[in-house]
Length: 323
Image: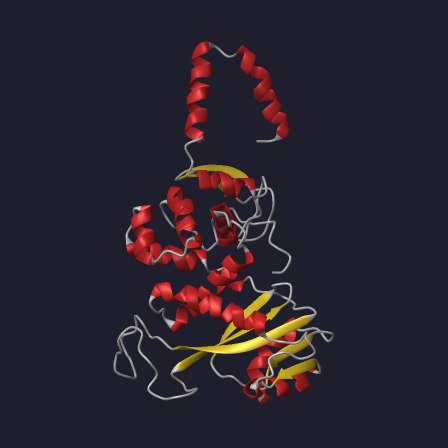
């Protein structure tokens, strides 16, 4: 409603009859029956949102559906709501989303989240990965000052797949070969001293893959600290950035009392410790879990369920600077 029309409505209230006031109160109560999460989303959205189909502005109000306000675009004539073209579009039980977001902050398993929210565990599985779609992409765009990079490996998991190239193994199994092999998935984490973090699941650990994922986030004045693997040295020379390599095998873990990789190694340790509660996850979903842990690590000071809800929709305006 436009401000002029709203002021006209307010000014006419004193002239309403008793019956008309009762009808108005009933209508207001009906409008307040929308799930609280919708009110949260509306508060973070424009009064007249852009059409997600053609990006035109100033759409018309077009009633409600399941408590969610709908709009109709004046240009393309298509209807939409505040969830259209977001990861949470067409999901049900919106009134339970805040409770589910709280269970994710607590790191609960699929079954515990389902029990807490009163829904089927298939529903919480679907919600989990819809909620994580955008947070998984919220990585640091630039690393400044001293940046640490290191790789860690986890056993590949094809959980849920029917056509395996090997015999199924028990949960918590081990690789059949020692050292690095195709049985292990490589996780690269780069992190600067402000806490800005980017991570990637790499198919291969080569100079080219490092260039692909790190070159855009490292500026020319960034100092890169790594262990002594030659692939990092090759990447640093190719990218023309300052590189401090630590000879870990010789016991050299700190250079000049400043350059080390203890920050990123501690992050690896926290991630692996946090992941144990899930008893193994499919490698195809690993980027989502990396994004989930990165979100928790970034918001480690009393994170709110509302923050996760808005980040899942891409509507949170006060995202920390290090992202």
